[in-house]
Image 1 (cartoon, rainbow, N blue to C red):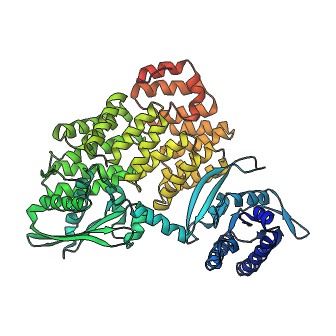
Image 2: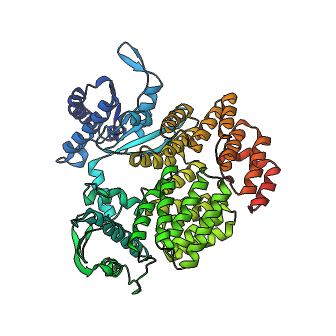
Image 3: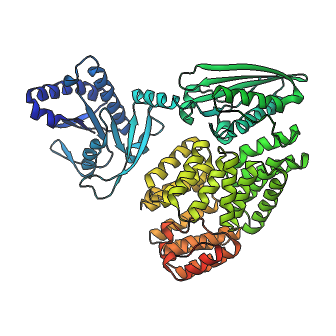
Length: 628
């Protein structure tokens, strides 16, 4: 650990006696703190402390205590007498000689300190890996930073101080129109009435999302808070919202009471509350009334008086709600379970627009994940999307899922039109922004793609699907630190999803950190040994690290996959990494025929040499990409 007094050199030139006095006060302040955390003072270099610890956690806690004590010390002093410190920490091997220590780790630590703010603490990823989930304060990834006299950029984190967090919350509080509808609570005597509470949550989100003046968090993220004891302020901070709607539903016989409150997420002040007593058959009318009232309270404009609903069947609606909670996780078992539930919803009500749209989304997910042969699965997705559009052309969900189908079948311009139409109807539909981002990526418009994926992630911050696309776009654009930051946040929320670890591995591979990439794949293999993407990434690691035989064996293993799309992806990616372009083009030619090719092939760094080959122009022509 290195500490440094901000502005010490300049102060010494202006007032040498004052600078010496402050350096002396700093030593008196810091030394007792070092002792409490078992820090060994190696030496003092002018105003800087150089300290060694046997534990990364001891170092981090000591750094926090140093900054906290310094802040308290400064409270009653005039500005010229205050001590301003920054701290840098690194973990690594050192060489000890005659009480001093040296080595590359020392050099990195001394450079990290300069990146910290006044009153701040910065540290490297090596430290972060040892303290994550063990330290109480928030930790923020600053990305990769170049350091003087250090060959490669170093990944840097900073500690978010409690007094800094308060400032962030105050800033968030100002955006009252960014809103989260928390899962309504079922307080009926019968637990089987849970569907009423879930339905109220769903319809409130749907109704509020119609307003372009509001930014409404998607249900995918919201339902993660169901049954969890978290404060309104904590949820507000996690979702970056200024307003929160919460409520309860109680059924008694044929009557229902809905209680709703609107809360300021920053102050936890109750801005508005109301009760609704209705006959149960008026449930959709109640939902409209409540949403309109909340919107008016937020001064977001007037909603249509027409109640929009696509089913009156409570059973069908319950199947739909359960399915749409499972589907966004994008694991094979969850997708297949959601298909079963959606088919039951449609059997109960064949006119249910959103159920058809959801079923289309599910079949598309099976195709994209390599869990089913590509074209047959996409054809089923198209059948359901067209049914949804036929039944409900006014529903954004129908246009969004049609956008995805058009994209998968290489109707690129039609896909963009449908995505834009979905956003026009419902600007808060995350899936539509993802579809738009995919098309921007396909046309190598990465800045616009990242913007669209960021919008989707803002609307659905806990969604695997949104986060995964954003991380991938960052990665392809060379913004590895930002990709890692997104994926790590996803891992904190969903620690057992194998494809998150695959994404981390791909990010580390792009940064040529193959050892860490292998650690991520090892974890992914334990969680999802049959995931096609996980096996593909293992093959890439082999290829990039010169293990051609193992890479070829991975291709052979992937040839046993059920889905032709998964087989072709393995051949394309791993052969390209091995420099075997003839084999890669064989796979790509077949991918063009069945429409199953990487949507980011125009920008992905792996395919740089592929794009230079004359045969690539033929591929572009087949799939409708512009040449040149």
